[in-house]
Length: 139
Image (cartoon, rainbow, N blue to C red):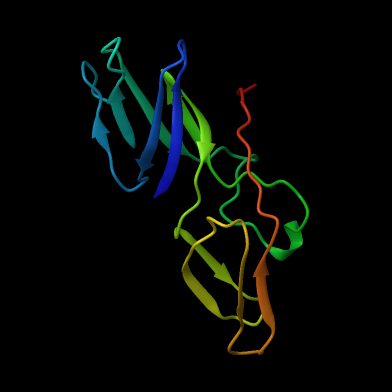
């Protein structure tokens, strides 16, 4: 589940606190297709949609210790009629320490998090979390 802010792709209207669940599918009107999030802008009544997708050789399922200090795309969105402009991390993350402890529902809303690995007694931290949206075009 991701919490986003979306802007109309051909306008200035913004929709805040949009919850996108990649395990939910909604039907697109006038189509046999589905999307993870479907809505209409009040002013235009035109339907917009957003799908959570993985892009081969671009996104990866996890950020690991080997990725420290690098930008890694962990999710991609296929957007129709909308553009994501803000991401609000919540308790949607899982952290696995090098010692093997698993921390579920980690809240990264403060961009930092810390705990202790029960197996190795070592500190486990997420620091200086940053994210950005980049436009990706298939070649």
